[in-house]
Image (tube, rainbow, N blue to C red; front, side, top):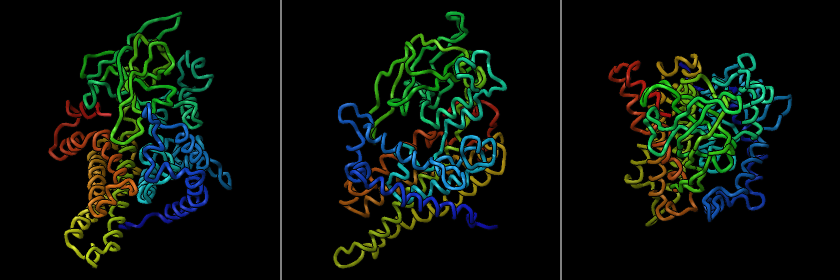
Length: 459
């Protein structure tokens, strides 16, 4: 058994680091752009009145993506689209865009371990190597020209729904939010109150949507929302939900508020939909099978997000070790004290073990069709995700303790890492949901019965 990373992957990371040093780091330090990353970061990023991201912050992230996305020598795509199929400018030879979970996990771990920087901003999910979770939804469930509805030609400018969406995501003309969670329904998504009723308006078949959605991340610059609504069956059923692509400028769509959060700025909106009409062409995927759409990117996203959390925890651990060796209260290094040593030994042991589990799980994901991943690896992915998200919070907290007063200040990165990653113990499927998924496998509960329906409902 060989635990070494593929040589072509390590060579790719070397090229990536060289690109960051040549293109991204100078941009970060030009024109005082480092204010978005040093002790001023939260205030530099946040509009003081609205709490929303400042335009200058959005513009800087966009410029970094532009540089990472530009074509390189020999007609190879830039780093940004690595995981996408070649027809969308990526470097993945697999037409379904799967097969790069190991590469993406290693890269995200590597970038997060480097600390804060324009190359990989954890708070905004920005990276010079893109992840594209919503692209996975379109890839797997949007209609191509071959199976287009009669109304698709007008709605999608003569393109298939899939190409229209994916090209729009990549050129940033389409910026959707993900509308599953509601003010009264989170983990119990199959009990959502939002409804879509079939109707005809001006000769067009469509649906009237009524309801509300919460935690609509990215709403400040969004053009559309993927709204999940009940179209049939009773509340609690895992079927009878449908995903609709709803423009934010349609009549009856309203942004009610933004949730100010532990880590600012916020772009997390609560919206209402009142008698919103959308044509039948707005359906993404199959009518009444919306949970399959919602699940399209869960496993890919969870393993890659776990890798990012692990990378951030490794950064906290390494910085703590350096501090413990260099700081000398009473003339002796902090590292000479077992009270400092033992907590970091525990974190190091967990980090080392978790790294191997993440890489092993990602490699297994690459070896099988997506349809098999839930049954074969769902529990392992949940272990990776909840463990990594808990570990990074512990590592950041311990780093603050090792650094003392300096660790509590914003001149170090640990408070930022803690405040950001604390959300993932809730939003990636809460720890309790993830542990419950592991328990289903561990204790042999019937995954095909009601337990599975509840698991399907989460995100």
